[in-house]
Image (cartoon, rainbow, N blue to C red; front, side, top):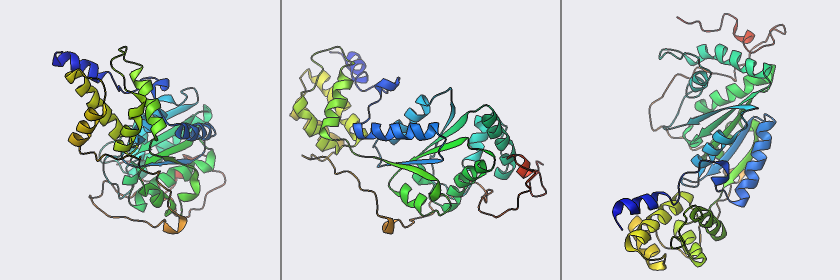
Length: 331
């Protein structure tokens, strides 16, 4: 078989999902997603999902982004690429979503009023905004989390129209729980646990069903071996299986233990007879912040939502709250 044909078949095995029924989540995770969907429909404030690197967090973020109801929600997907120590990482992205101009010299505080006006329009239209944030563990400083708290706090004044789904690594729970302002907004916490052998077998059966070739299949008794080598980690599993698929085609041999062991050795995966145990949520007494500044600040800490402010009862809308002497003006 020539390499072009092999590459074509290889690329078809575990293709990224394009429709909702093509996504694979374990039964336990599907149960959690059902709860998250209901909470978003009720415009509950903050949903947190924790998972180790490679567990499928970004896939889950994409699923939320692509399959939230367009009749009821607008959805913003925010992926954090570097560590954030200050505010200014979120509000400009929401402003861009609403089509607002965001000049480079614009301060975060000056964006509050136009963004709040857009949120009021959503309330009038009986719609809501779902913000899906991936790699939330990079919000390593409390000042960065305060911007998120500021937005959730503002909507409580004139109506609820905002839900946030925050996905991140193991440290995300520590960061959220140690923020006394943000922690009370959490309405649900989910865990993306490692796949079990039965999950791996179901995932592979569903994936290989897309390839109309009987020769290109994997015996069920190899699923526990793949689960053990990948430790139930979704990304490791996909890399392992796709590399095995390529070897099966190039060598023109059926799937077998020798091919899997050789590929695992090449990828540096240590063979294991059992998958990695499910990660346990840390106890409350162990929830202590572990904050380290690694990269420079990315923007000014312009939102200080915890500051006490007297509100004129006549001013009931979000935009009215910023019509005073303290509101920054555009220069």
